[in-house]
View 1: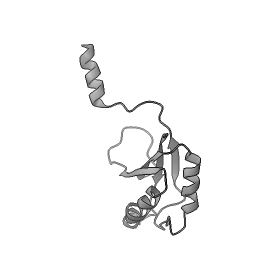
View 2: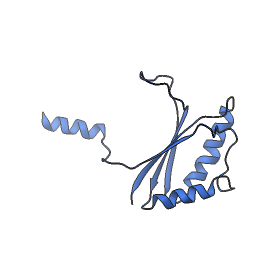
View 3: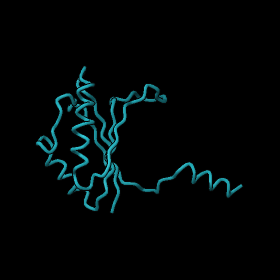
Length: 123
């Protein structure tokens, strides 16, 4: 089964952070994870500390793990649910400022433990 990572960057409508987070956490994440092939999700808020560089235009990040050999079919299913009772869209989401990206891994996951183990072997 092919693994993919779907990254979604969003903002709430001005002054609607609470409503947005309630909807996203309690309605949207369960709706999205109910799509076959989308196996996990986690949300993040932009940290106050940032490395020097351009200012982020999004405050929130959602990362979805997808396991499917037919990513187009998974996304067709996802799109067919949007705006229905199977995937209710919240009015606190700023739909004018959403960015989505689908990534497919090109390396295995490298852990700190693996790196330390290899460094110990080399010394």
